[in-house]
Image (cartoon, rainbow, N blue to C red; front, side, top):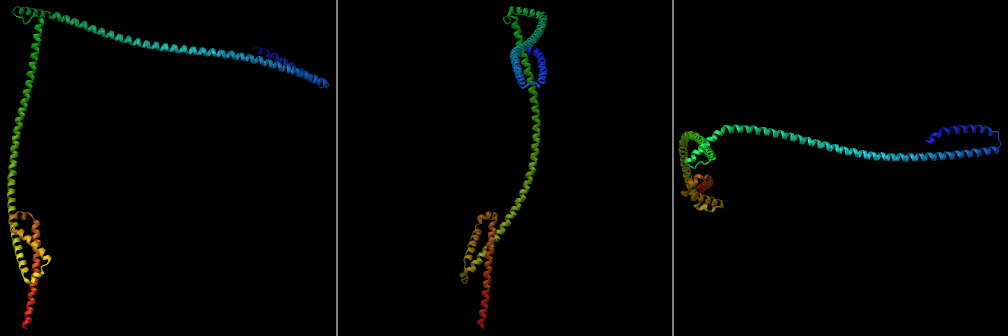
Length: 349
């Protein structure tokens, strides 16, 4: 603060020195060299003094600035400590406020619960009071029945020991009432069961009648089917008999044909000039024919021959082969006869 106050004074002094320097400069222009050197030394000394004064001034200002900075730092620390304390104080107050709000809400909830409980208790109390009044009215109304039962018990005790107290009479009444209710329930169940059984019996009779009618209809239909099947079976039997007769006739004819063919082949083979022509083919045919003839002679298997068409086909094939062989024999005989006639004519000539 003192340096700020001394600033105008220093500016005035510097202005005065500046004016003096200008006057001296004008004066030294006309002075000698030694005078100028002395003047320069004097000016240098003044400049050094001014520099020292400025250094002292700067030192004072730096010291003042340091003291001021230290004071500001301490003040800042105090402010930070105060801020921390204030923040802690605010946090404590906030936690206290939160706890107070929670405690207030809890107490409010408890108050509401207690008020509700009080209201329920008051309502229960009103109900109990009303029930007490009702019971008192019922007691006043039923006291005559109590007196009546007491007189009954007293009267019964004179002649019997069945009912010694009023509760015995009430127990007997409750027992009889329960037995009566059970009998009524059982009667109702029996009536319901009887109605159900009656409905089932009626339905059974109806179903039985319907079943009998349906069975009669089925019997009629089955009789018609039996008659139809009998007629169909008779026709089928007739056709079967005709087929059997036809097959028997065909088998008999085929047997006769095969026998005739075998006889002819045997006749041809017994001729002396034909014995040399017995080849492996003729032997195989003869063996097949022999098997066919043996089958033909076996009359015990007629039914199997009728059912086996393959046997008939094989017999037909064998018969055709034998007929072809007979045709070859006949051709040979015809050629032999022509050759014989030619030879006989040549001899006559």
